[in-house]
Length: 159
Image 1: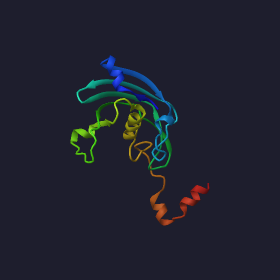
Image 2: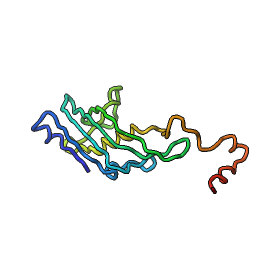
Image 3: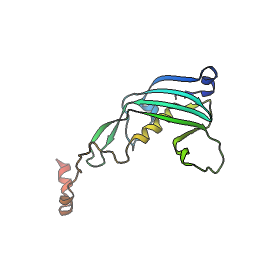
Image 4: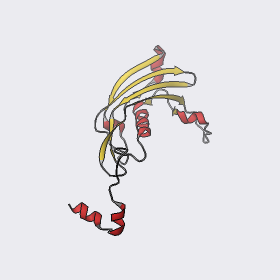
């Protein structure tokens, strides 16, 4: 687990910059979403701000997905940069969110911020709900043929 102690880091400096390679098992993507097979390169730059921290996060990597139309397995590039505001979670049973709160991540303990969780969240947000191998992708089953002969798909599978 890649944990950052922000309190210790910012005792001595105003900015923190680091470069990591995260193993696919450390990111632990849910199996029903996709699979990461190669290490993901992460560059993080953190600044202290009023009320929290500002993360500049650069991720380079790819994820294996299944096309929602043709069911082909394909690799999608997830390389992207994000700016994330990280603020202390104030607790309480009821939380009233404001529109700006949707752009903020929260931490409970300043001494143990898990970078893998932040990276996993950004990767999950970058994966489309219905992934397509290409914009021109054709559906796997010819709908007209399926309506006329519901067992036609079995004939294709047996080949």
